[in-house]
Length: 79
Image (cartoon, rainbow, N blue to C red; front, side, top):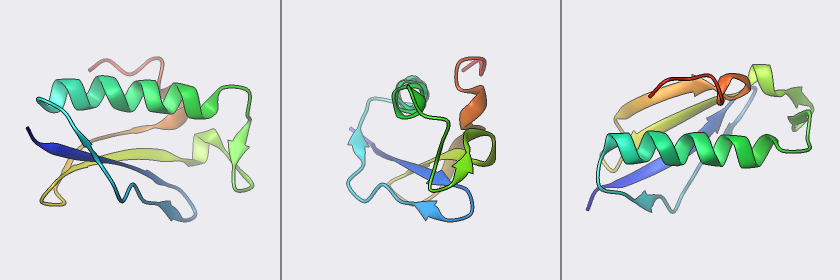
């Protein structure tokens, strides 16, 4: 099963160094949205920056970007 990494990029990069094994890109997109929503719950931002300044960047185990979206739009992004 492929491994995907869920990195958060803004003024800095918060890298996912462990990754998560998922069957395909669709499952990775669903997981990314859940992670983003959970991360933002009850908080207005991270490391001094509003959520609108952060992007979820999902890469595969080769480091290739498979999808990205602004965290502030996590609930509205169609995957």
